[in-house]
Image 1 (cartoon, rainbow, N blue to C red):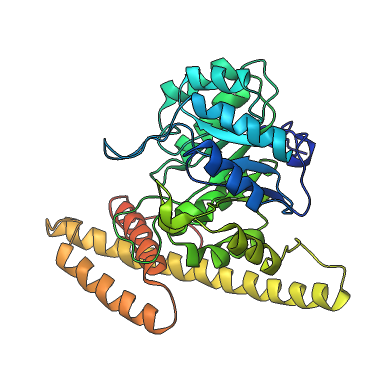
Image 2: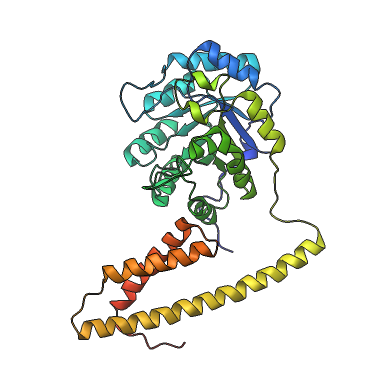
Amino acid sequence: MSVHPMSDLLPIRQWGLPIERFFLCAGPCSAESPEQLLAAAEGLQGCPLTLFRAGIWKPRTHPGSFEGHGIKALSWLRRVKEETGFPVGVEVAEPAHVQACLKHGIDVMWIGARTTPNPFAVQALADNLRGTDRPVLVKNPVSPDLGLWIGAVERLYNAGLRKIGVIHRGFAVAETELYRNPPLWRIPIELKRRFPVIPIICDPSHMCGRADMIFPVAQEALDLLYDGLMVEVHHDPAKALSDARQQLTPEQFKGMLDRLKVTTETSPNQRYQTRMEQLRHEIDHVDERIIDLLRKRMDIVQAMGECKRRNQVSTLQPERWREVMATRLAKGVHKGFSLEFLSQLYEVIHEEAIRWQERPLFRGDE
């Protein structure tokens, strides 16, 4: 039996944190004042909270935006911990941040989306976390690059850390209408396939950018067997100094928790198991047909490539490709598929088709 990479990571329920139904982290985007933090924490009393969060150092896109109060806000968080009993966590981006958090008794640290893509910064953080027992979470990089995400996790692992998880907060893409940072669920699903033991936390606040969208995304994450949620909650979001639109009130947060349903990977119900087995056989049959049809398409593509070479015609045909995309996308959308899915599907097919056109004819078994 093969051993999965990083199989000795500790399960999230062995991190020494209070976890009921799932890992649950909440709190304001930014620590704005001692009073604001306490108001938010008091509003969250009664929730099965694993971790109270707040941004201390805020790397903003534009200078002049509120960038946090820095080290002095760590004592505000420590007071929240003392008065409410909630463990507390913050984002770190520099070795000095790690040292300050260790000094102030911060329970959990995470690496932000802007830091994750920088191997030098992540390695510096890993070196400063070496020998500690603190749980560390890694947010996905801003760009949809699974390799960078995995690389950051590996650096922490190689530093001896075993309480490591990841935070899925969505990705920046060129075109988006619905989400602030579209989830691109396939990327964290692939991460989980490669590293089955790694805990995944969903951050629907940064994905959505709007408070009214958070519940369905949070539910989808739980349906995908995520280990928990990180949600931004402010006692008065309209007055928040950062990301006001995406923060829930404590009352809204509690209402969402009441509605969320935790799903399981399977069911002991025999009728369910029998029906799922039937449907899986159908899926297997359809997948075989898809593979056969794709192979048939590539055979045609390869014949086109031979014809182009004999007539000194370029492999890439931009006008034809625009026609293919327009017609296939229109038909696919009419059939109920999303434009995003169809675009990604045909871009991958086109890339593979170019590869087949540029190689000699394959004469294997059909």
